[in-house]
Length: 254
Image (cartoon, rainbow, N blue to C red; front, side):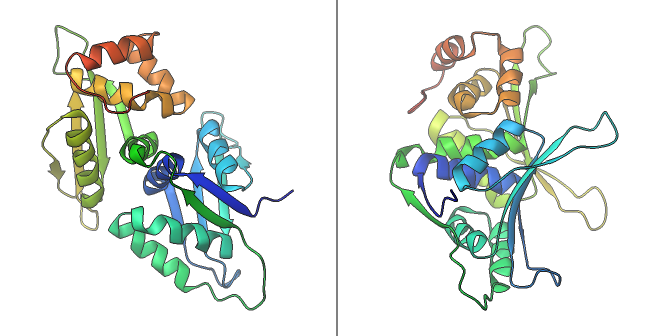
């Protein structure tokens, strides 16, 4: 049975907004499929795409490569009125660049016949966790978990974020400051060559990185959780929360 009326609780809606900010695609209708704007996402993380499929009532496509070293890509999408309904819901939470893409995509939607598309509603469940879930969704696609190479005597975990969107990096910075008390500088990397955009870079390490990882770890996919475990030990949640809270206050952490 096709699910037509779908409700999100606020927490997972903000997670989905963060994920689509980093990994989503919002496209206009094509000449071969007029009046059908498209919202899609492709990742190599099967569990994340399966989570999106479960939330949005879509289906999953699997793309295998002939070259063995290439990882399988998982893809899901919405087309037409269903895509427009979800894009309208996303728009207030997206960056300026994404809002422009959404507006251009929606402008191509001119249905000529009545087709009942999916409807989406956000329930006010977990609204207070907006920042945590948005950050986890965004970092699922846009983070580097590693080690601080400048620390030679101890193992110092690192959380590093890069994006071409100034307003997105400012949002990450604001969450780090308000939620964890982490104050670090945003660095701007000039374009590598003509036609490229500058990149905005934000990173924290040591206890600050532990605080971020402790807070979002339960919300991450298998690959990201595995990376955190490799960096910080197998008893991630118990040990990490204890160590992080020694220097940082985690609000609403699981």
